[in-house]
Image (tube, rainbow, N blue to C red; front, top):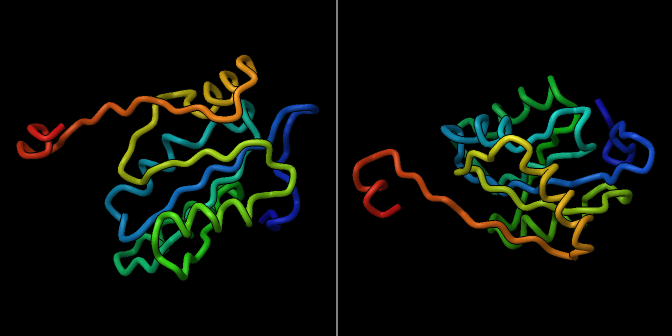
Length: 147
């Protein structure tokens, strides 16, 4: 497994991306969210920090199992529990060579190429931040009505 200070493999000159995903009791959603947000290995060099705020539902075990198969995934314990603290922690723990910080949610499924498109847009526009619209989709009748 890669140590937190050794950079993930990447093409020469390609930026390193840190994906920060705060989590708390997300066992039902975390695997799908991680699978959808992680770029293909040859598309973008990245690390994914799952910042867990004290889950008691198996979230940590799921992330640990995923990280055993993919060294880009790292479980980090967020002692302060709240999302803002998780993002600050991610910014502190991101690999020093990381050029971008992408905030991701556990209750989301990301379109194919999401991270690559963010990086490409930032480079093309010479932007310091990119915000994307959210398309809400409900599963239950109440969720669909709210969405």
